[in-house]
Length: 444
Image 1 (tube, one colour):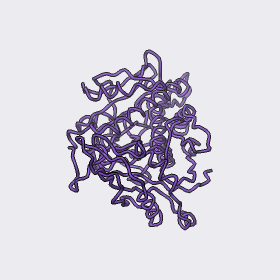
Image 2 (cartoon, one colour):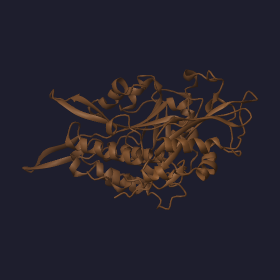
Image 3 (cartoon, helix red, strand yellow):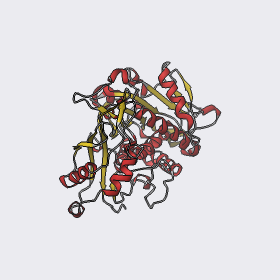
Image 4 (tube, one colour):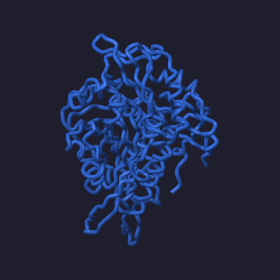
């Protein structure tokens, strides 16, 4: 299957951090490119996933595999990191007739920017399989009926793909790591999410929240945007209410209960706080009438804006999961950015301002690295001392010595910051930033 234009991201020549405004779903203001049309992108994702050639994306079929390949290519083009080859977790499912079927989850990660919180994960998931196609006889003639599953759940996958793209392009805005997962075999008993939770994702105990996107394409009073927390959860309910301030988004009605079986339930069974985002069931559910033309793409976009805002809020809330994580200093007496009462400031603003006004301005792309086509993200860690000076600059995730040295050089030359404060006193604070070296490439 050919990757749609929505999944092809032009990598412009940028030195420093990819510093992104929220408008236009993550188009950097400095980029001379047209604003990404999110509604059109959602429409194209749904159309591709519901195409005749995919034959309803039934578990174990070629159509499901082609859908998985499309999602994998979209994740890769968006810049998500893979911990499995092409992001694919392969697993097997026993079919109704006892035959063994193969399916897969597609997993991509946006690594968090905070040295402590990056070890915690928020999973955003949506299942991509459906019911396949069946032959029926009408008036003595055989016909093939395709169960396209536009709302169930091409809608959730389309939102997942656009959120993943936006998050990858605004990676520095997320202190916790975000795991985007397209689950296979949901229609056969949520096997894909079971496999992810119970077999495949080793740091499952570090997952602090799961957001499930399932059937978000229909609108109207009968299919109103809703969020289900499975059980009463005061902290989660309050956070869901707080995220509804964006005038460009739709705010869900929050229910302290569950609605229908879906992939979030396996996470909840492991005591992981979970939210099901949905527009609810309708008379076309699990029928051949669930087609792309019946989806409300404007409303899907508004719902996506809300979920993205909520995701960002939870990814950066240092108090979420605090009782499990514990707080305080590291053995060397240095606080993390999430554990100070007042974070360090660069020219009275946060780390993003440091990236924009210092790193981006003074970073130089080494000529030898350009000629050799070397590019990538260098993670740089440093300490902001109690007097505001920057010390102990080191690379914690390397690309190449040329890029590493340049990233360290520019950070080490930083002017003094306003130091972090804890309990009314200036303290040493550890900070970590991603420094991007990206060469321009022509994408066809």
